[in-house]
Length: 115
Image (cartoon, rainbow, N blue to C red):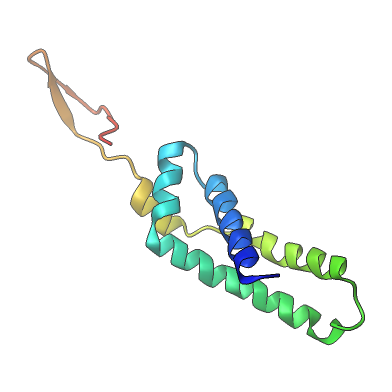
């Protein structure tokens, strides 16, 4: 696989992962563009690839390319069971206000999306 193909595959995986941990387009954009989450994802993905290498290194000459692909997919698919909840909550929490004046009347305990 070329470097470009690998980067495209990794980006596609990140896009699908971001979609799996968000509920709408605005949240998706925030997660996708967040540098901390991207750094976390790359580090966790590298752990999956390390596991793949450990599982396959002694079988390099005895298994097929399809078997390697299946094993790689099984190892990296684990990413879809992981998410950095704290990092995601930091950027997706909807700000709230305690009260607002509506035609001169004070109304409390309402939540508004301020984004």
